[in-house]
Length: 81
Image 1 (spheres, rainbow, N blue to C red):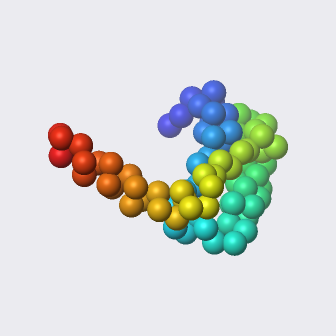
Image 2 (tube, rainbow, N blue to C red):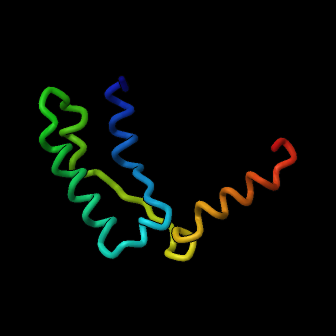
């Protein structure tokens, strides 16, 4: 379970990345779905009050498409692995 203050931070900082994030309209559909769910969060005013403050962060398209490969490449090049 999260503290109410953490709900605010999570809803303001949703990060969308990876190949599937390149689907046309996905960021907008996800934001609309999150706003709808948050506005109907009964018994959780800390979420319901944040429905209009939800923010979807996305990287530029080429970075989103190759993000998983780039992260794996960085991890594989680390001496600890």
